[in-house]
Image 1: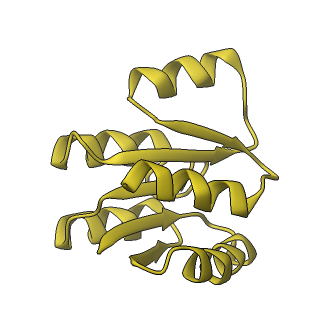
Image 2: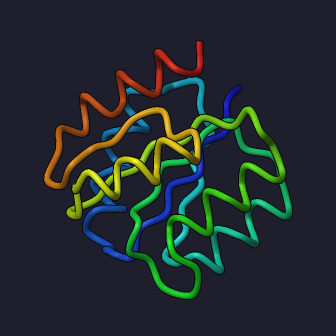
Length: 120
């Protein structure tokens, strides 16, 4: 069973992701964090196979979270969901080894399929 950590401050986004991803990804354990500190605590307490994070989260931004996750597990699959989608942002994320970017708003079904493919 794969474990996926999802970090976003927006409760509505977390709720929608929870509903759709629980249905789409039957063999995955989904963990949710409302800020970077919660996400870091989860990463320190258990291994995860994938992370889906917003870049703009409090107490530790998405970039810091990605760097922390990479230090713990260089092979972790990282997807980013963001409203800020510039060449500078994309370059920085690529340098951190981010697999895929989703510009908000995005298709949760597309995210689910991308996660399934990446975790196979």
